Length: 311
Image: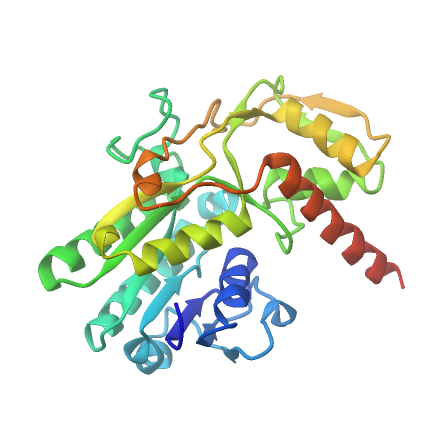
């Protein structure tokens, strides 16, 4: 992808900023972010930051209408927050997406939408294929499934070029440090302080972790492929890792003395998660980063960040 006008919503956040950093090398990149959770320092040099909210149609319509590609990463991503305030989550994740779809009808661009494995709920039919019926367990999952349906309808009704990517457990530098962030960022930051790593349950629950750089590649591939239009794809490594195995790897890579502590399982937590990535592989995608390699890069980044904060 070269010499295109690219809009990244949520481009000051975790995954959005990684997409922006990659695309700004050869394209004009505009980031739309209200900085609710995003950070200005995540914006790459050369990209234009527009402080706007996707719920406000008037503030985004021209930017979206002029874009060649829109990578829609802006969202309320906390499951806990979605349970506490489902109306706010609906406003950002569904109405915000509708605003983008409406604005795209005025232009010529393609939408690459960040969906989530949360649409599947706790489905035992592993590995999960895109044809499984969505059964989300949280308002967050409901909003992602609903947004996907709107994408499908806009594609079928208006011929709008869209693709939805169901992310599994993404990790990497710049992931948030709050309690709602991914388990990897939480484990790493506790291990760097030699604090206990807390596992909810017996640690035998599994997740399908994918490094953020691979997610960026999947986004660009889906954007450039016409065969992807109108479709939904899992974005994952296709490998299972137990949470206990993950905790031990983090302690080893950090060189920490952190004990592993077990707490009671959290209600609503999914026991096992694993993606079938056959469909996106047919587009040419292959995960390049192993869990260990990704963890080392992530630990390196958090170590540096923590060191700078101490200065």
